[in-house]
Image (cartoon, rainbow, N blue to C red; front, side):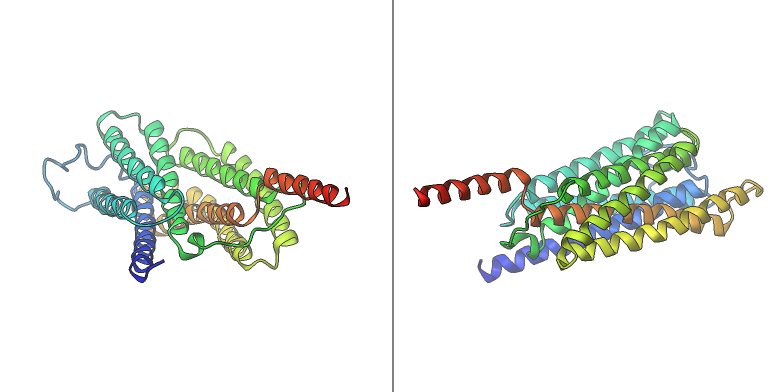
Amino acid sequence: MRLAETSNIRGVHNFAIVTACSTILLLVAGALVTSNDAADSVPDWPLAYGRIIPPLIGGIRYEYAHRVVAALVAILTVVLAIWISFSKLRGSARRWGWIALALVVAQALLGAARVKLGHAAVIATIHATVAQIFFITLVSLTMFTSDWWQRDLAQLDDTGSPKLRSLSVWLTAVILVQLVLGAGFRHGAFGILPHLIGFLVVTFMVIWTARIANKRFGQVGDIRRWVVMLHATFGTQVILGFLAYWAVSQARLATQPVLLYTIIEVAHVVTGALVLASSVLLALACNRLIRPTDMVAVESRTARSQAQGSRA
C-alpha cells in the first residue's frame, strides 16, 4: 500500500473516531433534555419559536443545544460517509458509512415527528433506540477503518461451545434490548420491571461471555482488551444504576429536577451506551480473529482427505 493511501486511511480512521466521540456529546445533550423535562420546550421544527436562535432560557437551552449538536453530528457523518466512499478501504466500511448517514437522517425525522406529531413516549423511545444503533454503527466504523482491521491477521480456532463469535453477538443484542427498556422507562412508555429483568439477563450474559473469552483467548491481547473495557463500563453502569434508582426516588420529592439527579441520569445513559460499544468492539474483534465453525469443519475434512490420499 502506497504512503498516500496509508495516510488517507489513517485520516479516515481518525475522523471516524472524532465523529463517534461527537455522538457521545449528542447522547449527553439528549439525556440532559430528558432529565430536565425539556422535551416540549420548543414547539416547532426545524426552527425554534420561528427563529434560528431562540431565547436561551429555561428548558429551551437544553432542547436547542441538543439540536445544535445533532446538526454537527449530521454534518460530520455526511463528510465521513463521502470520505470513506472515496478511500481505498477494504471490506464493508463503505456500506456502513452510508448506513450511518441513513440512520442520522432517520434520527432527524424522528426528532421532527416528536415535535410535530406528539406521541411522546412511543416516538421518544424509538428515537433513543435509533440513537444507540447510530452510535454503535459509528463505533464499528472506527474499527473497520483502523490499520488493525485492514491488515491480514492470523486466524484462531474456537473449539469450545458455545462459540465466542456467536455469544459476543448475542451479548450485544441483549444489551441493546436493555437500553431500549431503559429508554422506555425514562420516557414513560412502561414501568421499571422489564428494565430490572433485563438487568439480570445482561449481568448473566456479561459474566458468561467474559468468562469464556478469558478461558479460551485470555492470552490474545486484541480480545482481552475489549473484555477489560466491557468489565469496566458494565461495573460502572451497575453502580450508576443503583444511584439512578435512588436519584429518581429523591427527585419525586422535588418540584424541579435537582442537579445531582441530572448528573446521575446523564452518566447512566452515556455509560449504558459505552457498555454497548464495548460489546460491539468485542464482537467485531472475535468475528475478525476467530474462524467461523463451517470454515474449520471444511479445513478438517480437507486435511483428513489429504491424509487418506497420502496413505493410499
